[in-house]
Length: 215
Image (cartoon, rainbow, N blue to C red; front, top):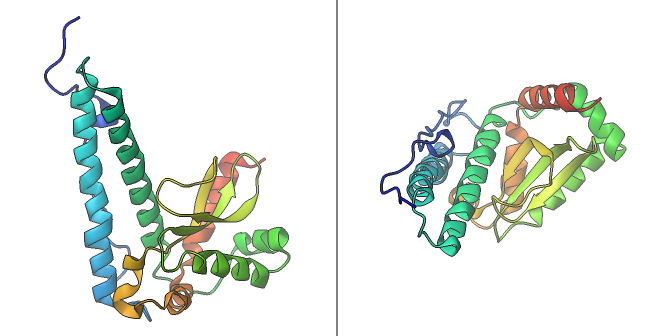
């Protein structure tokens, strides 16, 4: 069998991902400094975009090589999943900041139905997020399109997610998301994010996802 020596031209490995701009003025988020937001966007999010392009290019080259070791290919596939998760979660995170922090929309009623009260949902979300402090991970309000359930999801990295879970509200709990402003005080960072959550964006995600998947 002939071995391809040049990268295959595949849409799945196009290596053409581009970073999107911040959807708000980074200097106007109460409690979150421009320096923090800009560093996070440039050094973590954009780094993931560049990293995924590198991984996809290497996957395209490896796929055309019959002698490429499966164990090494698996490492590339893990990096593909890791970088993809990082991009998706970061883009959701930045997009659900820039608001006034005031809950609204049909998603609020849905949370009250799922958790009894909005206050109980918020308590669960905050505790889930705080449990990740000093380590790394993500806390996400997620709509499970298989069960229809709303739940707050704990994830220790970009790979952990609930099957069929669509993120509605995402909070980055990696230390890089708050250390510049708050040091080790993750609780103060969580408070600041709640003041900046854009519930109109959460509502858009909820309506879009529930309309498509929940009967």
